[in-house]
Length: 303
Image (tube, rainbow, N blue to C red; front, side, top):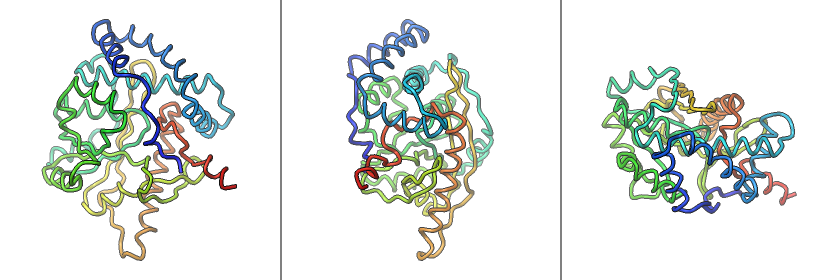
């Protein structure tokens, strides 16, 4: 099994702080110029990530992916990380962010209704978090593992302490209690549903033409809490443009009797995987799971 959490974090705190200083003091254009040598560095040094990118792009593009495709993939990822600086520093005016169906969340916020906001590693989740915190239109808490990518997380969160306060650590004490309290208080609770850790319950879903393991935690949480589930995709379109899409997955998820639980779980997970596949095909260079997602290396070793 491929464990994404075991991949070492690349880069240093000094390098991240240098890029951050350039972005904030010299502007977005000079900072974006640095993305090209950064892309080249990772294209050369990050072999497992390069291999995973090439496999994924070949799958989604329907043709063999070359190094130019992989470079574009890495560059898109680096661009969204850079834009976090401007989002967290309250400089959103530099970005062209377009919302699609925002009423799906704003109507629930206005009614004081807590709900789950289910995203993925497609595009930028930070776009939504910055909009929620800066505009104060949506009370938001985020379920995440802050220990992963600690260097860049700590440096960027230092820009906006409110971001750190919005996190519910999955590896902290009683995260489910914190989720329940947040939902009861009318918060949106955001989480990502396309990546699992070793030992976490999963089910196989068809994704881009092949079976892939998806964690069951998000759907199980929705069933236990009984709150609506809204899907979120913050797609980077190049330059300074982002398209933020909201879609209703369910007003309420019910899994039924225990004997039918896995079947119902898989049906809901497959709906999520289908919508994720739709947007992935629409914006393939936004897929930021740079590891053996379909466990092809594991299958090859078994054979």
